[in-house]
Image 1 (cartoon, one colour):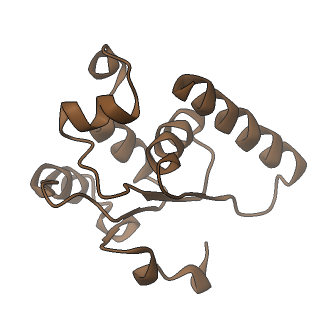
Image 2 (cartoon, helix red, strand yellow):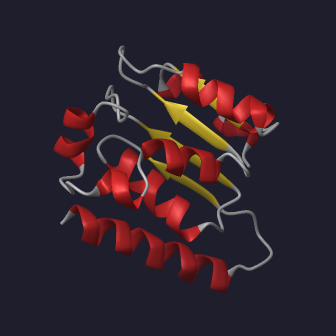
Image 3 (cartoon, helix red, strand yellow):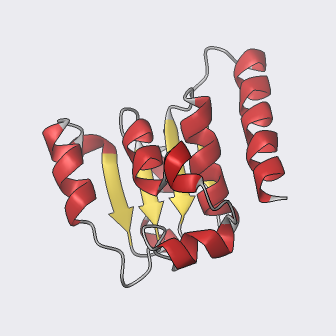
Length: 134
């Protein structure tokens, strides 16, 4: 079902972009759908901004990501880090990461790509500046 959800989100994004080609496309995934939205938006590639709720999870930790997205070969396809780097070229906000999430690798790669102004991590939904979208 999770893979179908990712495909459904990709299809919806393509449909919205086709209907409104000139408008900014901001994608928000909250709760358990946050990670699915993150993967779908990274596959789609046409969103101007993505806000993904990690729902207190650490998707860099295999057991946690597999509980949300039970695809054992996910690392071969491109994991959480790959999705983040693909989306950081636009704008990406991660919300409510788990307490064990290690930002060191992500921060270093995003800084090396000179995309630091495109990437933010917020501790809760209340911290996200929704009023200044996109």
